[in-house]
Length: 178
Image 1 (cartoon, rainbow, N blue to C red):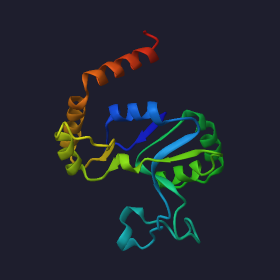
Image 2 (cartoon, rainbow, N blue to C red; image 1 turned 120 degrees about the horizontal axis):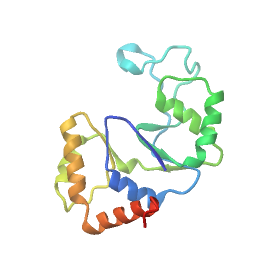
Image 3 (cartoon, one colour; image 1 turned 90 degrees about the horizontal axis):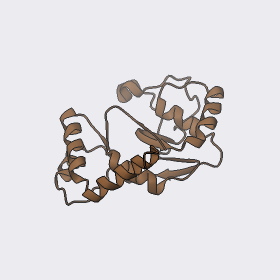
């Protein structure tokens, strides 16, 4: 499984790793899908996301695409993504561009994992501090770098002894050490 995450995203790599072992198959894209997102063309209201009149001319909304915060795909679709990139004109909003490429992959399974995302970093930090509370959030948009470090340390604290042993054993097996 390949994970793409923005640099301002905290990834609970332990939760992600366990999820990827249990939930991923072949020919799959997993993300928080955006559907029918309106195209922004009015400069006072769209800041850096305004597009030019000739970009997506005649379109009112973008094709479906993944939130750029984080998404995953299986390695077996890389050749199809590459082939799609060779024939798809470049578009500067990378999330939308990847959606254009994903849309050309035949028979791909689209797995919606929006429940694993949060843009409410302070709320998630507060929840992570309660070490007995189960928090499904795996990807968190971060604006305060201090929260990134705190979430990392809290993620380590949340690992059980069994969880640490499982991660170590699986890692060693994959490295052909065991």
